Amino acid sequence: MSNADTSCDRHAPELVRTLTVGGDPVGWMAAAAFSHFLESSFKVTLVETEAIRTVGVGEETILQIPVFKQALGIDVDASICATQARSMWTSS
Image 1 (cartoon, rainbow, N blue to C red):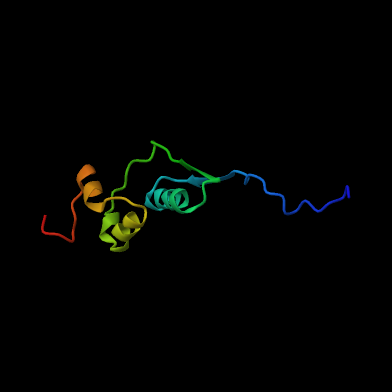
Image 2: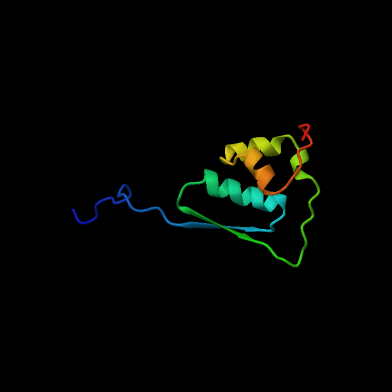
């Protein structure tokens, strides 16, 4: 049979490219989540500009942010130390 059904043939998944525009907290969180939780066939690119200065409005004040970081495998205490941040939820 020359017209065999080939729909079940296994093939490598196509690369899916995702683009996150904006390096604000929501932008980096989206890019980090896509990169961490999506299959390896996804390529994530984050585009940001240096023309906009860092806002630093205290994103860590939202209690879910440390939970989000933990889900990504980020050591929350180490990230606070590395960024010289100050936790509002501890006495330090």
